[in-house]
Amino acid sequence: MKNPLPALTTETFERPPSLRESADPVVLYARSYLLIRIVVGAVGVLLPIVLWVVDALVLRGSITVRGSLSAYYHSGARDLFVGALCITGCLLLTYLAGQRRTWDYWLSSVAGAAVLGVALLPTTRPDFYTGPPTPLQARWGEQTVAVLHFTCAGVFILSLAALCFVFAARDRRHGGHPRLHRTCGGLILAAVAWAVVGFVVDLDVGWLTSLYLAEVVSVWSFGTSWLVKGADLVRAAPRRRPLSAARRSPAPRRGRSRRVPPSSSPHDPRARPPGTPPPGCAPRAG
Image (cartoon, rainbow, N blue to C red; front, side, top):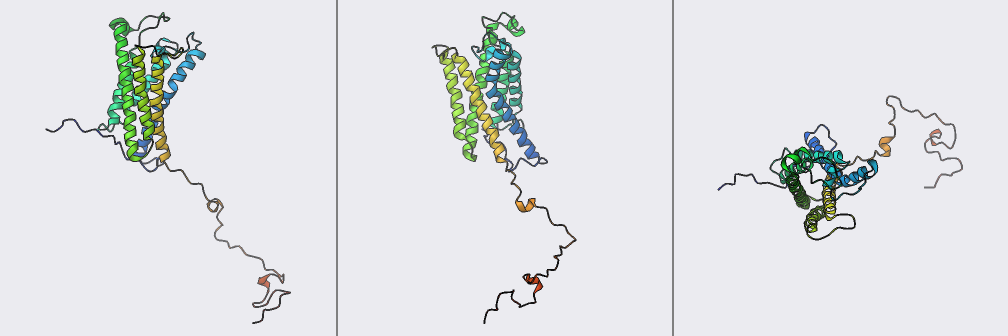
């Protein structure tokens, strides 16, 4: 019986040898592919740091590190948190949208939809937050929305771990950093296990909760994997060789030949008859 679902592959598209040909549609596609990877990776690496800086320094919040990254929804950095996740979700949904028979497309689409759920379905309000619930929390119940939030977060993180292993499989065949991507995927899985165990056993490190540490390790790992893949495509473009000294020197003007003025010096070979030795030199005997 024939499988109705098409077989998925880890191969995407053939990389162009150079990314400098702006008129080549393949190069333009590769550039957009590269840009999405760099932006998604940069958001993942910078998000925990920017949230802390904005909440602690710019808005002068009383609590600088929350119990989780999701808790920043109920802080002064809410707009930044929601905006960053929405940007990431939209980019993941459009990542390799033209190649639907690849694992990259389906895993990134699932991750993009899940992270939009993380942004729009907030976690429970912390004790210090005195604001009203969101309309969804008021309609569905705060605990129900929180369960949906953590479900979306789990799907998002596990999809990113799977993408890291897809990157590793492709790099193992075509060259790159398969070990780094496998390490990033393994760190994400270890962080998820750390967070799950942390709900049963106290695994907090000082004032950092196990859930916060797990989320930071996960987003930093996936961000690093995506940034490295983007850097691989940048390095694949050949660099321009510097011009040689001969090419940098101005070319002689055409149409006019440079005339050398006649010399009257006896030491100038042009002023002596052929076969005449220079002054002071006797002809060699045959």
